[in-house]
Each structure stands twice: as structure tokens, then as C-alpha cells.
Length: 396
Image 1 (cartoon, rainbow, N blue to C red):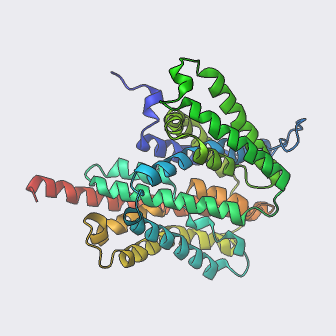
Image 2: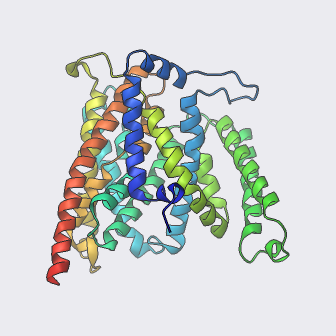
Image 3: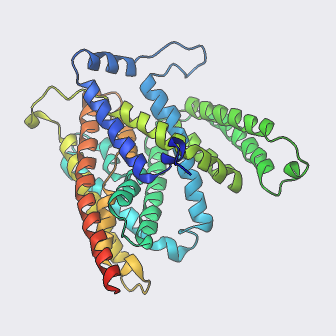
């Protein structure tokens, strides 16, 4: 059966190519004479809409609205891993958790050492790993890599995403309007209860009632929850996280599978395009601010150092096979962890909101740091894949 475009975008490799292509296109168009000025103007245009809180620019509709769909998928996947996957016991979760924490702490410290005096709010930017990109690079260049390496990378990236969610919730929420948050909580409770009607053993389904009224109501509640969270002052993507955690397990995993092509093929490329559509700063290299250099260094270097050092410490005395006893594979995972991209771009927008020039410099720094990480991780993964291929041929 021929693979359709719908199924093609489920591929981690294709998702990574689309992400990078969209970011490059956004950066190129934003710096073309005439087109660039119009594109940036449109991205920052705030239309007047009757509902409160919805007069968002196209850029914010993407980062605050569409990206909530991505965080919903991440949340569902995280819950699955915690319940039935590679993080479903303390023993399984311990090493990737330690490695993920190291991969957050080291880049943050490197950033603060370089730019902490002038731009301390930017420390979260280099702490994130782009799960789609990292798995995409592993899929593109690592056909011979054993499955346990991918599993460890997935577990680490999922924990990394959870940490990023907590950072967004606690460090980028200046004030919370409790009545709006209470409205969101009420919608979540109804959403959670209704989603159980779509579980396989639900009496509702056994009575052969139609699914569409429940599904339509769930979508309406999801949108209403997002609006309440937006109005509460909490970053709106947290609505996607909350919805992913409260939805019943089977309906949630089914919805995540249905949304995967949309997330890979539309949501993430659109965000990458919108976030990367910035003009190159009209300054010389020696005039770039400290935050630029801090991100460029901390993202590709800090992640690999933190993940490797913490992973080695966490694996001391471990009798588990696989990556816990293989520092070379751990280093390969650390290289892949340095690809920040999507979540780092979001952190950059949140950290430097209100300072257009610093935000633009931070965006270019995230792209530069991620490209560096993509380059050296692709080489590392390819060499490691050849090593495992030779071992397979020799039968060892």
C-alpha cells in the first residue's frame, strides 16, 4: 500500500526535516528586502476581536494557541510513559531523570556565568530538548543504533519536556487571576468525566450511542479551557498540558495518534516558521549582547556536559545493561539533547518578551546553537550506527 502524505508526516525523520525547513524559510523570508518588513509586520499585527484576550498577533496565535496542541500530545505521551512505558517504575525512571536534570542544570549555569549579570531571565532557554528533532536526527542517521538507546533518549526527552512545562508554569507566570483559573479547573473536571464516556468499556458506548456529540463537546471544552487559562495569566500552552493529563487513557492515546500528523506537519513547522521569522540584528558580531553568546555556548555544550556527567554519576554501581554501562552511547544521547529548537524558541519569547532586539538575538542564537548540535550529533550518530552495523556483521 503506498504511503500517503498523511502517514508520511508521522515519521520522526520527516518531522525533523519539516521543522528545519520551516525555520530556514522563516529566517530567509524575514531578511528579504520588502518581503521581510511586510512578513514581520503581519506576524506582529494585533487585530481587534470582540472577545477579551483574543486580540493576539498571528505569532502569538501560533505560540499560545496552536502550540497548546503540541503540549497536549506531549502530556498524553508523558502520562503513558509514567503509567505503562519506560518510566513506569522508580528503577526505570531514575537514570533518565538524573540525566535530564543534569541536562537542565548545566546549561542554566553556563548561561548565567556568561550573561547572568545583564540578562538573568534567559537561563531557561538552553535547558530544553526538542523531542521531535532529536528523535528525527536519530532516525535519519542511526538506522543501526540499538532500540534501548532510542528508548532512553525518549524517556530523557519526555522528562525534559515535563521540566520545561514546570519552568513555564512557575517562572513565566507573573500574576494569576484565580477566578479565571477556577473556570479552567471546572472545564477540566467536566472534560475528564466526559472523556471516560469514550473509553472502550464505557456503558455509553455499549449502548451504541453516537460518539460525535461527546467528541464535539470535548473539543468545545478544550477551547474554553484554553481561553480561561489564557485569561488567568498562566501561559496558554499549560491548558494543553492539563487536558492531556486529565483525559481518559485510551481516548487520549487515540486522540494523540490522530493529532500526530497535524502536530508534525502543521503545528510545529508553523511555530518554527513564525518564531524564526526575525530580521538579523543590524549590528556587528562584536556588538551582539551577552545573551546571544550564552545561548550559543550553553545549548550545544551545556546539554551534552550535563547529560553525560549526571548520567555517569547516576549509573555508578548500576548493574543494568545498555546505556547505563556505555558512556559512548550516553554521550551520543547528550549530543542529541543539545538540539533545543521548538521549546527553546518558546522559552526565548517568554524570557525576553518586551525587548524586540534581545528576543531576535535570542532566536538566532537558539537556531545557531541547535544547528551546531544537529551537525555534531548527526556525525556522532552516523559513526555510532556504523559501529553497530559492523558488530552485527561480525556477529559480536
